[in-house]
Image (cartoon, rainbow, N blue to C red; front, top):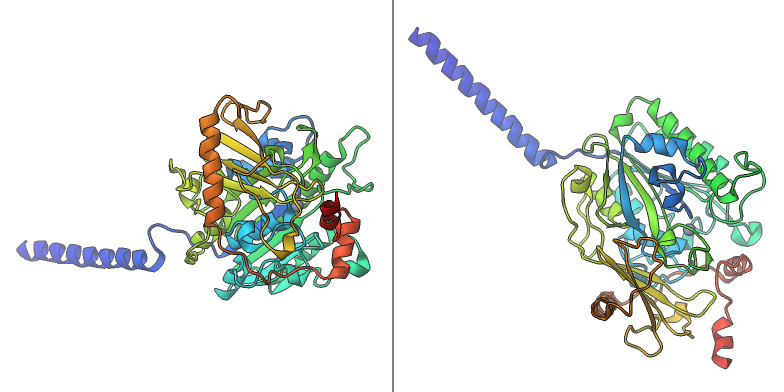
Amino acid sequence: MWFRSLAVVLIATIVGVLGYARLSSNRSAVGPARWHADKIVLFTVDTLRAGRLGVYGYDAATTSPHIDAWARDAVVFDRASAPSPWTVPSLAAFFTGRYPSEMAIYTNETGIPSQWATLAEILQGEGYRTAQFNSHSVLLQPEMGFTRGFDEVYPDEYDLAEEGEHKIAFAVPEQEALRWIEENSHDRFFLWVHDMDPHLPYSADNPYLEPDSLPYDAEVRRVDASFGDIVAHLQARGDWDDILFIFTADHGEAFGEHGVQGHQNVMYDEVLNVPLIIDAPMIAEPGRVREPVDLFDVRTTILDLAGIPVEAGTRGESLVQLLEGKERRLQRAMSFHSRYYFEDGHHELAVRDRRWKLLMRTPKSNDRLWSGQPTWDPRGEGVHFELYNLSVDPEELDDVANIYPTVVERLKGALSEWKESLDRPAADAPRLEEQDLQVLRNLGYAPDADRSDNRNQN
Ligand SMILES: [Zn+2]
């Protein structure tokens, strides 16, 4: 009997030691209970207002049946905001984890300086296969920096000066994306799809354009169809549960809520709030997150889930714990937004905390944005402020700046400190070539070269 007892003890000890060893090596190898994201899909939509998707409460028309159905199994962020209402500054921040002002990116003409590594460059450097399929022709220009780090870019060449369009029919990039998935996605991969359909001009041959539908809604419905095709394709492959899938937008669109249309001159939340939906199936149960997050947090989250250290000085915070359903507040107490002059000569800055949003508009500026930092000072003369209590007035209809002067002062101070904290922008930020710039100007997409000179005379 004693022999049998000793054997049981010995066996139990050996199993225990082996078990402990296995646990220990697991911990040191992959970190605490962390899933490793080897397959990453980023689907961004240009000019997609969160409030025009069913998942964000839109019920005036059916715009997003595929996105809504997919989102039911994912984590929906209700308060995600973009750092800028412009495509290039917003997506540059997304890809670098830096505020656009830090990189001297003030409008759509200036690209990402080479000193800042993009998300794609980092993932490529870690051995991911990388590809982008894009219908925004400005983002495809090599000097803009968005093609860096991609093994494959489609379309691989787009001559702005010759072709003159800035919106490519998305059906072609979509088909190419499906081909690429077939050929390349058995390995670690990062796939970026950027669909520009909801951006003006709206197309007349959109099959979802009904006689009584709003053209914008029909464009969103077409994005939804492309999204549905790509998701269905991935779901049919058998590794769907291994894919980290992120859906978001660079900015929204205004339809006169504050007397302005479009997005380039709008700093209200119909433009700054963006959809953000993340499906991280191995770590996240479906749900909604109310914590305010910034677009560049997505970059940090992707790197975190890929097990790649995030560079010091980047602005994003990982959303992994929020994805895991933990009650948690991000460390960042405030978010900042910037929009430098376009047509009207005013710079607009905004700062928000969990309750308040302070919007600041400078007097007319004569800055030439590509030759230095724009001049603005929250304590300067003639600066206009609006204050909104987002917790009771999310549509920003009731300016309460006169009622809460101490809040205004506190947030003015935060804007000043934020400006001080920005690194000096690189003097050599790359710009589009002059012939390409002229195409953007003709489209109303970039200010005239001599406009600031005119202003000096007026
Ligand atoms: Zn855009």
